[in-house]
Image (tube, rainbow, N blue to C red; front, side, top):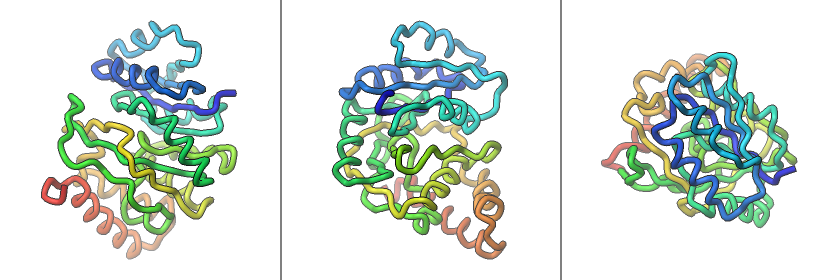
Length: 250
């Protein structure tokens, strides 16, 4: 079995897919499997992936478009690696990402870790300061802001099991991390910039006003908090989100 399973959802990502592929193939740590699930792309993403002859790369084409959470879950069910990590089809890893993260987790005896990452435009040019991995992450502080980004995080499935994404929520990554942190006391920060995140102008995650309701439902429906408590955490999350991406603070 490979040491690491890389989980990638793909939907109409042909514009950036070759750079993402290159960032995985250039990893200094090579004992990995890469499970890509295409979510019924209408561009040539599948054709690009099928040109790859590396047996470590395993493509699944979904029967229907079910969203990123559904696509990740399809890959997760097939994952056999001890360490689980995520990379969207338009993001980028530094060549030593896997090597550094695994070494850090073993050194710290950590079940969950995350690194700093650069916040870039579509051409991978930094736009604001790097997001710093400078705080330990717990269930309680993750309620107020999601410090864990999929592209810069890793967990040990041998110790905590696989954690799946709730399907249908636009905040599926936040819910997944919260569920994981119910099982473990803390996630450890690796304060090195190990990845590059593309901040698209059309990205769902950047349209904060449009997802306040979805974030509220994280607390109200998935965590079953009271209305008042859910509103409090939604407001706190929104404020921290503004600070996280505002150029004034970065």
